[in-house]
Each structure stands twice: as structure tokens, then as C-alpha cells.
Length: 446
Ligand code: ATP
Ligand code: MG
Image: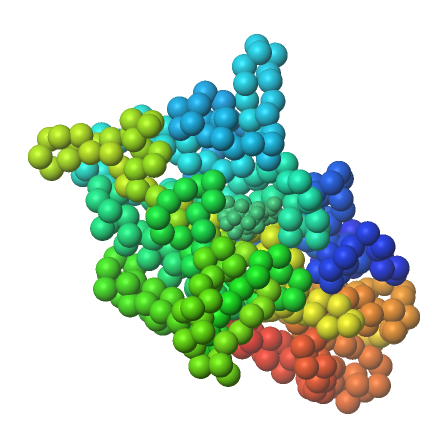
């Protein structure tokens, strides 16, 4: 993409309305524009990151054997009357009446709708296990939308639902989700710690929230610092293996890590003092097992092996896709701007022509631009007439992890500069060498 033809409305001034750094940087980098409280347009740069995050979520869900689909945003109230949640949900639910005077709502979550789909189409235990998911916009009329996409009213969520014959099978689905989530967040360059949580309006017996530690987080968390040493890495997972999923769950949840809702001072006090931590965290996902809470009232049963009807055991599992942009920026920035982890960066590399209008730098840039495309590396090519200082400031603000700088002095020796946004280190190398380096770096993020 040539910057001269792109739409990147960066702001020079720090917007006054933004209280936290991720919100400020998303506005300054021209990623989002507020349309009304808690509702945003995703401008091209923000949209690219959102799509990267969605892509990783899709890949990891499907790796775990979960099936993608898409349900509508608008739902009939009658479904929610069946579960009893139409009255229970409260003012966070946006209620709408259509021209036929039918009560509708903009879905805050989809347990009822997916239960209806499954009950209408599945009748035998032989059709199980089944996990369906979608990535769809949700609406919750939050009392205090704030912090940009972090607490929006309209926000993008991945929500998945498992249907199983027994509690045991459903708990395997729960464990499988926990494992796939660990992998998902790590691919985005985030450490998200599973913490015992409270089930809230979804209801249920078992639940973990995934929290990214950050000063600006809305949740108070308590943990044993040993949990922060755990990494998932590139281990091979057999998602059908009950033992393997269980042992990973154990590994990642046996140390104390809880939100304030489930915090227990007495248990916390047993951790050696030097490992006791109180901090703040951003909730980027949550998994629930809730048994037959929806299947019983909604009559979602299958014929079991003995021919008798059995209510389905269910769970639901959410990832805050749009909130993740904020969380990633909170965890990856400096005073110049964003520092995207390679896994989610909107462009793999920035290309800067230091002397626009000059025939040598121009043709070198064109050559590199074409070679990067051949190597399937996405590039934002600053071919504008701006001064070098302004170009660097924009590149630093939007946070591409790598930058190739092309200037007349280096070119005289056949060299360009490859710069890491994270370390600030620059290395002079041939254009081919720089492209080879980038191919190697990104091979690990595909
Ligand atoms: P919170 O406690 O932050 O209000 P929640 O527990 O009500 O969230 P869930 O029902 O667990 O939310 O939804 C799954 C995920 O969706 C959350 O973990 C969070 O990452 C994201 N999410 C929830 N509400 C919002 C919101 N208002 N704006 C952006 N993302 C949200
Ligand atoms: Mg939650």
C-alpha cells in the first residue's frame, strides 16, 4: 500500500477525551472514529488489525475442531422469554420493536439462539459432541462506555458454544477451549492469565476469565507471580486428548490467580509473600461450563444411548475481539506510539523513501516494494513528500514492527537500513538482506 493513496488520518494533537493510552493512540493513529458513545467506525488501519485478530481466532478455533458459522445481530425476544433472560437481563439489553410490533433485541450474547438452532436440528447423541462458534457484533448498553474499544456498547466478540451428552464431555470441551485460548492470545503477543472468576448473568458452575495485566485494567486481580512464568510455546496439541487438555489446564490454573469476585484472603496468604501480587487486569475472554441451564428450559434434548431423552450439557466461551486491540496496545507501546507484535501488525513492514522525487531512491523503493509483495509481506510504503522527521514520527506512531529506510547516502554503497520498532536498533544491509531477514522473522508468525 502506498501511503499517498491510503487513508491514514493521523492526529498531531492528543485527543482530550481519551483517558488511557490505548484509546489515545488508536485515535492518533487514525484507527477508529467514534460515531456515538461506545460505538466506533473502524478506519482502514484499525480494520486491518481487527481482521488479523479475527484471523488468528478463526485459525485457533478451527485447529481445536470448532465449527465457524454466523448468527444475526437482531434476535426475537420470544427466544429469551423461553430461557427467562428477557426480563432478567436489565437495561444493558437494547430492546427494539419492529413494524409488526414484535419485540426484538440486539444480541448481547447468543446462548438462546444457538440452543434453538441445535434443538431444531439434532436429535441423537450420535450427533455429539458439537462446538459451533461465530465472530459477530454484540450490543450491550453499558452504563459507562469508556476507554475506546475497551468498553464499547457495540463490540466484536467471538462466542462459541459446546453441546455434549454428559458433564464429563462438556468439561473436556471447557478444557479444550482453555487450551486453544492460551495459544490464541500468545500468537497475538499477549500473556493472558486464566483466573477463577464469577459467572455473572451467563450463570454456571465453572468459569475462568483470561486477564492481561495492565495498570489501566478494570478488574482487580490477585495472583501468585509464578503464573507469569508459564508460556504455551509451540507445543503440539491433540485436542481430542482428554488427558492432554486436562494436564495443560492443571498446569495453567493450579497456581493462585483470581479476580476480586472470587478472591480469598486466607488462601492468598498461604503463598510465600515475595510471590504475592495484587494488580489490575483487562478481561480479554471468558469460558463457562453451565450444564443444562439453557437446554432444560428450552427443551434441547437428544435421544441418549438407552433411547431416553437427555438434556444437552453446554458451555459458552467468549473472546473480546475488538477489546483485544486496546489490550494489545496497553501492553505494547512507548512514548512514541504503538509497537505491534508481529502476529497482529496491520502491515509487516514500513518502507520510507528519505528523498522523495529522487530517481535513485524512488526506483530502489519501487524494487523493494515489488520484492516484498512477492515474498507475501505486506508493506506500507511512505512515498509522500513529507520531511524525514515527520515520516519517522508517523511510522513510530502507527507501530509497524519493522521499517526499511532508503536514503541516497546508503544507496551509494548498495545499502538500506532495517530498523526494529521495539528495540530502535538499525542495521545497514543490502535490500535483499533486509527482505530475507523479514521473511525469516515472519515465517514464525504464519
Ligand atoms: P465485563 O465484565 O468486562 O463487562 P463480561 O464478563 O460481561 O465483560 P463476557 O460476557 O464474558 O463479558 O464477554 C466475553 C468477552 O467480551 C469479555 O471477556 C470481554 O473481553 C468482551 N467484552 C465484554 N463486554 C465488552 C464491552 N462492553 N466492550 C468490549 N468488549 C467487551
Ligand atoms: Mg466475562
